[in-house]
Structures are given as C-alpha cells and as structure tokens.
Length: 262
Ligand code: SF4
Image 1 (tube, rainbow, N blue to C red):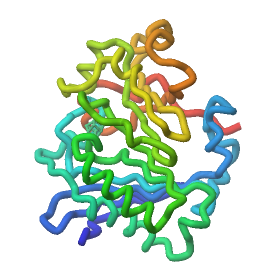
Image 2 (image 1 turned 120 degrees about the vertical axis):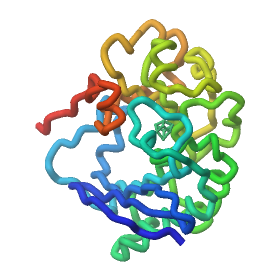
Image 3 (image 1 turned 90 degrees about the horizontal axis):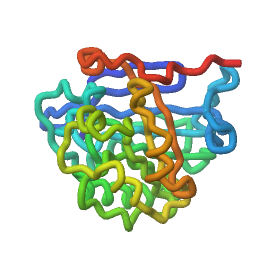
C-alpha cells in the first residue's frame, strides 16, 4: 500500500508525495485542463485562452512515477536530489492511478473526454519497461478509454514495437547539440539525436519531441529537419520547472517563459 505523505494544490490540480511500504518516496500528479487545449497541433500551441480551467470531465491527466528516484540525473530534474532509487512494481504504478481516482469520487475516468496517464514523473520508464507494460494492461482492463503517454530519453536497445493505438511516445530531446544533450542527460547508454529520429511507432498519434531549450543555442532547425520527419514527430517546447537541481546548474526557465492569457 502506498502512503500519502503530503500534497500541494495548484489551480488545475494536486501533486501528492507518497511512500512505498518500504519507505521509498515517489510522486503522482492529478491535473485537468479544458478539452480545447488538446488541439495543440491545429492551434500550434496549447495555451489557455481564459482563466476557466475546466475540470476532470474534460482532460483528466494522472502523472505517475515508474521509479522512486532515478539513475539518469538530468541536470534540470529535482529527482536527482534523491540519493537512491528503485524500480516500482506494476502494482505500485497501478496503485498511483487508483489512489488519484479514489481521491475523486465525483468523477469517472470513463466519462472524461480524455483520460490520460502520463509516465512522466519520477524515473525513466524504459529502465523499468516490463513493469510499465504490465501496469498499462492493468489500467486498460478497467479503463479501456485510457491514453498512455510514455516519456523516454531513448535508452539504447529499447523495443518500441508495442507502442501502438492508445499508447504514445514522447522523446526527451531537450537540445539539438549532441554534446549539450549529453551534459543535460548524463546517461551514456542512450540513442544519439540521429538515432532518435529513426524511432517509429504505430500509435494513433505522432511521437512527441520534447524540447526544454535551455537557451537558443540548443535549437538547430537544420538538424531538426534532417533527422525528424514532420509526418512522424510532433515538436513540443516546454519551460523548465525550476527546482534546486536546475538552479544549481544555472539553467533558468529555458527559452519558453509561459504565455500570457488573451
Ligand atoms: S529521466 Fe526523467 S526522472 Fe530521470 S532524471 Fe531525467 S527527467 Fe528526471
């Protein structure tokens, strides 16, 4: 059983700090957004157009941890503050989803216009992929309308053949400068930028390329065009969520500062 340690509310959701039975910390997020923010491709951005934030009947997203801690130690990630890590079991991943659903008895995931599990909190999913796959099966059995969104740095030798239908892949690219990317994501056994461009899935959606650009020197349109087919990849620019680790590495917010409501 996971135990709740504390939580922090924000305008469109809550983040919970939990502990496993053997006292490993992890976090899970419960967020929602208006449904129109889903059309990021059509609108070229997914900024809010008003202060109306919708509720869990529209886009309901649960961000789960696949590990407690993480051995990758990205330069912008607060997970690096934890000294040790361990893979979570499929049951522990599934339990995070149950935990959030049980916290919201007035909402039904089956009635949400979009119910999405983001494998984006603590841990690199592909370093624990068999348990992640089992958790996906467990969730799909009860909530077949779930969209699973798995974010990876691109671990060498990963099998992407099972990423199909309601399962979508996000790749943490962050910089188009190989050396800078290696510094930001200091894990040696990962695909090069060119190799990432060769990844193909059978998802209903394009693979997302996530770019937390630290500064403009991380962007290279020619490399982007050369390696990433626009029909297979969707580019997402996101800000850095500032934390003690990112500040210690002097990364700031990145080039995306957020968008003003109009
Ligand atoms: S792989 Fe993900 S969880 Fe691990 S350090 Fe990098 S950003 Fe953090």
